[in-house]
Length: 151
Image 1: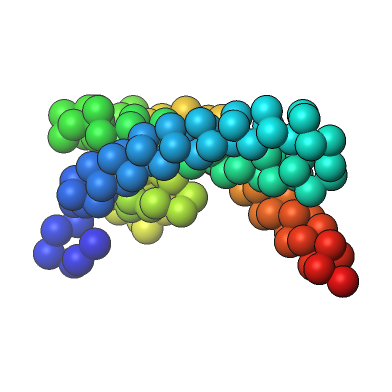
Image 2: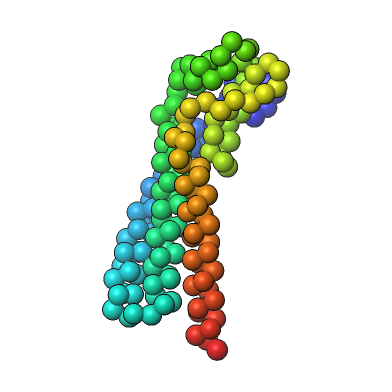
């Protein structure tokens, strides 16, 4: 955000690209994860199960984040103004503080405080954080299993 555009929100091109990417990748990872899960059931190996679980965790993470970004896409200028006026109350609104990580839409007041507007559902960021930890951990376990198998 630049100083000459204090009321600029999230970049709409980035929001659209994130939604497009998120929908495609979530669908692809979900299908791939389910196929891996079916194979893991017949293979009955720890590595196959971990790979399926990691893939599905990544799908869930990207899907959850995309769900939050979708809320930004549906959030127009009028909604931004109303949400910020509600969030800051009687204080003067001096601009917006958008963020992609964590996903949020903040409202900057005249005294420099940033108050979060109720745009993104409250569960999106905590769920994304938990899913990110799960996805990275499961991917790490999968890599360890792969290295042990090579030995």
